[in-house]
Image 1 (spheres, rainbow, N blue to C red):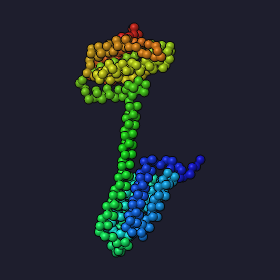
Image 2: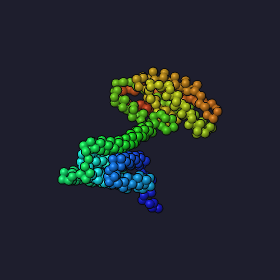
Image 3: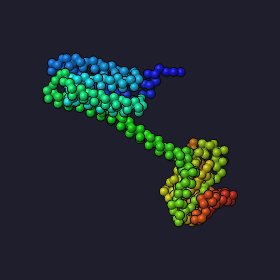
Image 4: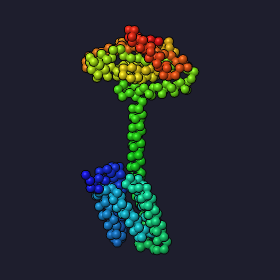
Length: 353
Protein backbone atom coordinates (compact mmCIF):
# COMPACT_ATOMS: atom_id res chain seq x y z
CA UNK A 1 0.00 0.00 0.00
CA UNK A 2 1.37 3.40 -0.94
CA UNK A 3 0.92 6.30 1.46
CA UNK A 4 0.79 10.00 0.53
CA UNK A 5 4.30 11.40 0.29
CA UNK A 6 3.75 14.29 2.69
CA UNK A 7 2.27 12.09 5.38
CA UNK A 8 5.05 9.53 5.13
CA UNK A 9 7.81 12.14 5.26
CA UNK A 10 6.20 13.94 8.15
CA UNK A 11 5.66 10.71 10.04
CA UNK A 12 9.39 9.97 9.99
CA UNK A 13 10.57 13.57 10.44
CA UNK A 14 12.78 13.83 13.53
CA UNK A 15 11.24 15.90 16.30
CA UNK A 16 14.49 17.74 16.97
CA UNK A 17 14.68 18.95 13.37
CA UNK A 18 11.12 20.25 13.30
CA UNK A 19 11.71 21.94 16.67
CA UNK A 20 14.81 23.69 15.36
CA UNK A 21 12.91 24.95 12.32
CA UNK A 22 9.99 26.01 14.49
CA UNK A 23 12.20 28.13 16.76
CA UNK A 24 13.94 29.66 13.74
CA UNK A 25 10.51 30.66 12.44
CA UNK A 26 9.56 32.15 15.79
CA UNK A 27 12.72 34.25 15.89
CA UNK A 28 12.28 35.54 12.35
CA UNK A 29 8.58 36.31 12.93
CA UNK A 30 9.45 38.34 16.03
CA UNK A 31 12.15 40.06 14.01
CA UNK A 32 9.66 41.07 11.29
CA UNK A 33 7.18 42.31 13.91
CA UNK A 34 9.91 44.37 15.59
CA UNK A 35 11.00 45.77 12.21
CA UNK A 36 7.47 46.73 11.16
CA UNK A 37 6.64 48.44 14.46
CA UNK A 38 10.00 50.25 14.43
CA UNK A 39 9.35 51.56 10.91
CA UNK A 40 5.84 52.67 11.86
CA UNK A 41 7.15 54.38 14.99
CA UNK A 42 9.73 56.23 12.86
CA UNK A 43 7.11 57.14 10.23
CA UNK A 44 8.84 55.01 7.60
CA UNK A 45 5.58 53.44 6.39
CA UNK A 46 6.83 52.41 2.96
CA UNK A 47 9.51 50.22 4.47
CA UNK A 48 7.04 48.72 6.94
CA UNK A 49 4.65 47.87 4.10
CA UNK A 50 7.31 45.91 2.23
CA UNK A 51 7.99 43.71 5.30
CA UNK A 52 4.36 42.64 5.82
CA UNK A 53 4.37 39.96 3.03
CA UNK A 54 7.52 38.41 4.49
CA UNK A 55 5.90 38.30 7.93
CA UNK A 56 2.83 36.63 6.45
CA UNK A 57 4.97 34.12 4.56
CA UNK A 58 6.89 33.25 7.74
CA UNK A 59 3.63 32.73 9.66
CA UNK A 60 2.24 30.50 6.90
CA UNK A 61 5.47 28.51 6.81
CA UNK A 62 5.43 28.01 10.57
CA UNK A 63 1.79 26.90 10.51
CA UNK A 64 2.62 24.15 8.02
CA UNK A 65 5.63 22.78 9.96
CA UNK A 66 3.49 20.02 11.49
CA UNK A 67 1.41 19.45 8.36
CA UNK A 68 3.82 19.44 5.42
CA UNK A 69 6.91 17.61 4.23
CA UNK A 70 9.81 19.07 6.23
CA UNK A 71 11.93 19.36 3.12
CA UNK A 72 9.48 21.81 1.58
CA UNK A 73 9.30 23.78 4.82
CA UNK A 74 13.09 24.14 4.80
CA UNK A 75 13.00 25.25 1.17
CA UNK A 76 10.22 27.78 1.81
CA UNK A 77 12.00 29.12 4.90
CA UNK A 78 15.20 29.50 2.89
CA UNK A 79 13.33 31.42 0.18
CA UNK A 80 11.92 33.77 2.83
CA UNK A 81 15.33 34.46 4.33
CA UNK A 82 17.11 34.88 0.97
CA UNK A 83 14.30 37.09 -0.34
CA UNK A 84 14.29 39.29 2.74
CA UNK A 85 18.09 39.50 2.73
CA UNK A 86 18.10 40.70 -0.90
CA UNK A 87 15.34 43.22 -0.22
CA UNK A 88 17.02 44.48 2.96
CA UNK A 89 20.34 45.06 1.18
CA UNK A 90 18.49 46.69 -1.73
CA UNK A 91 16.87 49.07 0.79
CA UNK A 92 19.79 49.86 3.11
CA UNK A 93 23.02 48.70 1.52
CA UNK A 94 25.82 46.38 2.55
CA UNK A 95 26.79 47.91 5.90
CA UNK A 96 23.51 47.24 7.76
CA UNK A 97 24.16 43.56 8.45
CA UNK A 98 21.57 42.05 6.12
CA UNK A 99 24.09 39.67 4.57
CA UNK A 100 24.51 37.96 7.95
CA UNK A 101 21.22 36.12 7.41
CA UNK A 102 23.07 33.83 5.04
CA UNK A 103 24.97 32.10 7.88
CA UNK A 104 22.15 30.29 9.75
CA UNK A 105 20.79 29.13 6.40
CA UNK A 106 24.08 27.37 5.68
CA UNK A 107 24.14 25.77 9.12
CA UNK A 108 20.58 24.46 9.05
CA UNK A 109 20.96 23.21 5.48
CA UNK A 110 24.08 21.24 6.45
CA UNK A 111 22.15 19.57 9.25
CA UNK A 112 19.28 18.66 6.93
CA UNK A 113 18.73 14.92 6.70
CA UNK A 114 16.49 15.25 3.67
CA UNK A 115 19.12 16.22 1.11
CA UNK A 116 22.16 14.57 -0.40
CA UNK A 117 25.66 15.93 -0.07
CA UNK A 118 25.46 17.10 -3.67
CA UNK A 119 22.33 19.14 -2.94
CA UNK A 120 23.95 20.70 0.11
CA UNK A 121 27.00 21.68 -1.93
CA UNK A 122 24.73 23.13 -4.61
CA UNK A 123 22.83 25.14 -1.99
CA UNK A 124 26.10 26.44 -0.55
CA UNK A 125 27.27 27.54 -3.98
CA UNK A 126 23.89 29.20 -4.52
CA UNK A 127 24.27 31.17 -1.28
CA UNK A 128 27.82 32.09 -2.26
CA UNK A 129 26.55 33.34 -5.61
CA UNK A 130 23.84 35.40 -3.89
CA UNK A 131 26.42 36.95 -1.58
CA UNK A 132 28.79 37.82 -4.42
CA UNK A 133 25.92 39.21 -6.50
CA UNK A 134 24.66 41.41 -3.66
CA UNK A 135 28.16 42.66 -2.95
CA UNK A 136 28.64 43.59 -6.59
CA UNK A 137 25.22 45.28 -6.66
CA UNK A 138 26.15 47.41 -3.65
CA UNK A 139 29.37 48.49 -5.36
CA UNK A 140 27.59 49.86 -8.41
CA UNK A 141 24.22 51.01 -7.03
CA UNK A 142 22.97 53.38 -4.36
CA UNK A 143 20.69 52.34 -1.49
CA UNK A 144 16.96 52.77 -1.99
CA UNK A 145 16.30 54.01 1.56
CA UNK A 146 19.43 55.77 2.83
CA UNK A 147 19.92 55.70 6.62
CA UNK A 148 22.23 57.55 8.95
CA UNK A 149 25.33 55.98 10.43
CA UNK A 150 23.52 55.64 13.73
CA UNK A 151 20.66 53.71 12.14
CA UNK A 152 23.15 51.61 10.22
CA UNK A 153 24.79 50.59 13.51
CA UNK A 154 21.40 49.76 15.04
CA UNK A 155 20.47 47.60 12.03
CA UNK A 156 23.84 45.87 12.21
CA UNK A 157 23.40 45.06 15.92
CA UNK A 158 19.80 43.86 15.58
CA UNK A 159 20.47 41.72 12.51
CA UNK A 160 23.59 40.23 14.04
CA UNK A 161 21.70 39.41 17.24
CA UNK A 162 18.90 37.69 15.29
CA UNK A 163 21.39 35.75 13.18
CA UNK A 164 23.40 34.60 16.18
CA UNK A 165 20.22 33.61 18.03
CA UNK A 166 19.10 31.47 15.10
CA UNK A 167 22.52 29.88 14.78
CA UNK A 168 22.59 29.19 18.51
CA UNK A 169 19.17 27.54 18.32
CA UNK A 170 20.19 25.31 15.43
CA UNK A 171 23.59 24.39 16.88
CA UNK A 172 22.26 23.73 20.39
CA UNK A 173 19.39 21.64 19.08
CA UNK A 174 21.55 19.47 16.89
CA UNK A 175 24.51 19.23 19.25
CA UNK A 176 22.17 18.12 22.04
CA UNK A 177 20.65 15.53 19.74
CA UNK A 178 24.11 14.31 18.70
CA UNK A 179 25.15 14.03 22.34
CA UNK A 180 22.00 12.05 23.14
CA UNK A 181 22.58 9.81 20.13
CA UNK A 182 26.22 9.24 21.13
CA UNK A 183 25.18 8.43 24.69
CA UNK A 184 22.51 6.01 23.50
CA UNK A 185 24.99 4.44 21.09
CA UNK A 186 27.54 4.08 23.88
CA UNK A 187 24.98 2.42 26.16
CA UNK A 188 23.85 0.20 23.29
CA UNK A 189 27.42 -0.82 22.46
CA UNK A 190 28.12 -1.55 26.11
CA UNK A 191 25.00 -3.68 26.27
CA UNK A 192 26.02 -5.53 23.10
CA UNK A 193 29.49 -6.08 24.51
CA UNK A 194 28.01 -7.34 27.75
CA UNK A 195 25.70 -9.71 25.89
CA UNK A 196 28.61 -10.94 23.80
CA UNK A 197 30.70 -11.94 26.84
CA UNK A 198 28.10 -12.99 29.42
CA UNK A 199 25.71 -15.84 29.98
CA UNK A 200 22.15 -14.46 29.76
CA UNK A 201 20.78 -16.53 32.64
CA UNK A 202 23.45 -16.16 35.31
CA UNK A 203 25.17 -12.93 34.24
CA UNK A 204 28.54 -14.70 34.49
CA UNK A 205 31.11 -14.63 31.70
CA UNK A 206 30.40 -17.06 28.90
CA UNK A 207 32.72 -19.90 27.98
CA UNK A 208 34.44 -18.22 25.01
CA UNK A 209 35.23 -15.02 26.89
CA UNK A 210 36.82 -16.74 29.89
CA UNK A 211 38.92 -18.96 27.64
CA UNK A 212 40.18 -15.85 25.84
CA UNK A 213 40.91 -14.23 29.20
CA UNK A 214 42.98 -17.21 30.38
CA UNK A 215 44.88 -17.46 27.10
CA UNK A 216 45.71 -13.75 27.23
CA UNK A 217 46.90 -14.21 30.80
CA UNK A 218 49.12 -17.09 29.75
CA UNK A 219 50.70 -15.00 26.98
CA UNK A 220 51.17 -11.94 29.18
CA UNK A 221 52.40 -13.84 32.26
CA UNK A 222 54.32 -16.85 30.93
CA UNK A 223 56.09 -17.53 34.24
CA UNK A 224 53.19 -16.93 36.65
CA UNK A 225 51.31 -19.79 38.25
CA UNK A 226 47.55 -20.17 38.08
CA UNK A 227 44.94 -22.85 38.54
CA UNK A 228 41.59 -23.74 37.04
CA UNK A 229 38.66 -25.56 38.62
CA UNK A 230 35.55 -27.08 37.13
CA UNK A 231 32.47 -27.50 39.30
CA UNK A 232 29.30 -29.41 38.55
CA UNK A 233 26.04 -29.36 40.54
CA UNK A 234 25.30 -32.81 41.91
CA UNK A 235 22.09 -34.49 40.71
CA UNK A 236 20.93 -31.31 39.04
CA UNK A 237 18.65 -33.28 36.71
CA UNK A 238 16.63 -34.33 39.74
CA UNK A 239 16.03 -30.67 40.61
CA UNK A 240 14.69 -29.95 37.13
CA UNK A 241 12.61 -33.13 36.98
CA UNK A 242 11.13 -32.70 40.47
CA UNK A 243 10.62 -28.95 40.77
CA UNK A 244 10.77 -27.76 37.16
CA UNK A 245 13.29 -25.91 35.03
CA UNK A 246 12.39 -22.55 36.55
CA UNK A 247 13.53 -23.86 39.90
CA UNK A 248 16.71 -25.14 38.25
CA UNK A 249 17.31 -21.69 36.75
CA UNK A 250 16.89 -20.15 40.18
CA UNK A 251 19.49 -22.54 41.58
CA UNK A 252 21.95 -21.54 38.86
CA UNK A 253 21.38 -17.83 39.43
CA UNK A 254 21.59 -18.12 43.20
CA UNK A 255 24.84 -20.11 43.09
CA UNK A 256 26.31 -17.66 40.56
CA UNK A 257 25.67 -14.81 43.00
CA UNK A 258 27.37 -16.83 45.73
CA UNK A 259 30.41 -17.51 43.52
CA UNK A 260 30.80 -13.82 42.66
CA UNK A 261 30.65 -12.93 46.34
CA UNK A 262 33.27 -15.53 47.29
CA UNK A 263 35.64 -14.67 44.45
CA UNK A 264 35.61 -10.98 45.36
CA UNK A 265 38.15 -10.07 42.66
CA UNK A 266 40.47 -12.99 43.40
CA UNK A 267 39.59 -14.72 40.16
CA UNK A 268 37.03 -15.11 37.42
CA UNK A 269 34.48 -17.70 36.44
CA UNK A 270 32.07 -18.56 33.68
CA UNK A 271 29.13 -20.81 33.12
CA UNK A 272 30.90 -23.62 31.33
CA UNK A 273 27.69 -25.24 30.16
CA UNK A 274 24.46 -26.52 31.69
CA UNK A 275 25.14 -26.86 35.41
CA UNK A 276 28.95 -26.66 35.10
CA UNK A 277 31.14 -23.70 36.06
CA UNK A 278 34.79 -22.97 35.24
CA UNK A 279 36.92 -21.01 37.73
CA UNK A 280 40.11 -19.18 36.78
CA UNK A 281 42.35 -18.51 39.80
CA UNK A 282 45.45 -16.47 38.84
CA UNK A 283 48.43 -16.55 41.20
CA UNK A 284 47.20 -19.69 43.03
CA UNK A 285 48.97 -23.02 43.01
CA UNK A 286 46.97 -26.22 43.40
CA UNK A 287 47.14 -26.13 47.22
CA UNK A 288 45.85 -22.57 47.50
CA UNK A 289 43.28 -23.14 44.78
CA UNK A 290 41.96 -26.37 46.33
CA UNK A 291 41.60 -24.69 49.72
CA UNK A 292 39.81 -21.74 48.09
CA UNK A 293 37.42 -24.04 46.20
CA UNK A 294 36.88 -26.14 49.34
CA UNK A 295 35.75 -23.02 51.20
CA UNK A 296 33.32 -22.31 48.35
CA UNK A 297 32.06 -25.89 48.44
CA UNK A 298 31.39 -25.62 52.18
CA UNK A 299 29.48 -22.38 51.56
CA UNK A 300 27.38 -24.16 48.89
CA UNK A 301 26.28 -26.81 51.37
CA UNK A 302 24.95 -24.15 53.72
CA UNK A 303 23.51 -22.00 50.95
CA UNK A 304 19.71 -21.91 50.80
CA UNK A 305 17.99 -21.40 47.46
CA UNK A 306 14.50 -19.94 47.86
CA UNK A 307 11.90 -20.77 45.21
CA UNK A 308 8.14 -20.31 45.57
CA UNK A 309 8.30 -20.32 49.33
CA UNK A 310 10.38 -23.47 49.52
CA UNK A 311 14.05 -23.82 50.47
CA UNK A 312 16.34 -25.99 48.39
CA UNK A 313 19.90 -27.14 49.04
CA UNK A 314 22.35 -28.56 46.54
CA UNK A 315 25.94 -29.81 46.57
CA UNK A 316 28.72 -29.61 44.00
CA UNK A 317 31.77 -31.56 42.96
CA UNK A 318 34.96 -29.85 41.79
CA UNK A 319 38.10 -30.78 39.94
CA UNK A 320 41.15 -28.51 40.42
CA UNK A 321 44.26 -28.40 38.23
CA UNK A 322 47.42 -26.29 38.37
CA UNK A 323 49.14 -24.91 35.26
CA UNK A 324 52.35 -26.83 34.59
CA UNK A 325 53.89 -24.27 32.12
CA UNK A 326 53.97 -26.80 29.28
CA UNK A 327 50.37 -27.90 28.65
CA UNK A 328 47.99 -25.90 26.54
CA UNK A 329 44.73 -24.61 27.97
CA UNK A 330 42.60 -27.42 26.54
CA UNK A 331 44.82 -30.05 28.15
CA UNK A 332 44.74 -28.19 31.47
CA UNK A 333 40.96 -28.02 31.52
CA UNK A 334 40.72 -31.64 30.41
CA UNK A 335 42.73 -32.76 33.45
CA UNK A 336 40.52 -30.69 35.75
CA UNK A 337 37.45 -32.22 34.09
CA UNK A 338 38.87 -35.74 34.59
CA UNK A 339 39.25 -35.01 38.30
CA UNK A 340 35.68 -33.72 38.38
CA UNK A 341 34.47 -36.94 36.78
CA UNK A 342 36.41 -38.96 39.34
CA UNK A 343 34.77 -37.01 42.14
CA UNK A 344 31.30 -37.51 40.62
CA UNK A 345 31.82 -41.29 40.47
CA UNK A 346 33.31 -41.52 43.97
CA UNK A 347 30.75 -39.94 46.22
CA UNK A 348 30.12 -36.36 44.91
CA UNK A 349 30.17 -33.20 47.08
CA UNK A 350 33.95 -32.99 47.18
CA UNK A 351 37.00 -31.22 45.73
CA UNK A 352 39.48 -33.37 43.83
CA UNK A 353 42.96 -31.94 43.23
